[in-house]
Image (cartoon, rainbow, N blue to C red):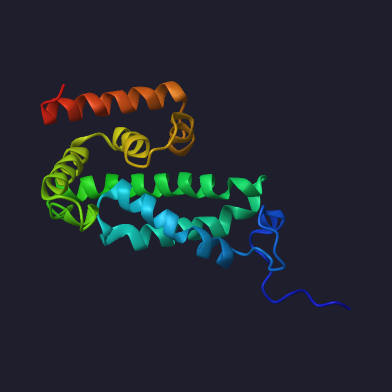
Length: 185
């Protein structure tokens, strides 16, 4: 009688992954491959790093439950991006609620820019993220995915879980508010 492996692959559909290796693709492999990507997306969506580790952990906890339902192994990165957007959106909504009740200090966005960025660009980036805090969360997520992450509109719509027309409206509304606040509109 053959014994089952002690740790069955949580990501069975990923075994047929584009990377052909002898190693079975497990959640650990997916975590190693995509955790930095998830953290980077979360950092840009949230604008500060104090919640990034929690977002990464929550995304991969969701992955434990949902990875087996993926039909396309190549869709893992996009699916993780979608989960990251949803988790970050909940965090932003909770941050806004905590701020309303005075339970969350105004965030500092200085760490979002690279150390070698010129001071004027660093200041502009801090200002943009402070303005993003004032936007509705759905507009912020769509605008950030499009203009900070550089995602194509269809990918933004998938990640935000809405239609292309809706995501275009959200991005446009966010851009108009930012232009007005920055004096360029």
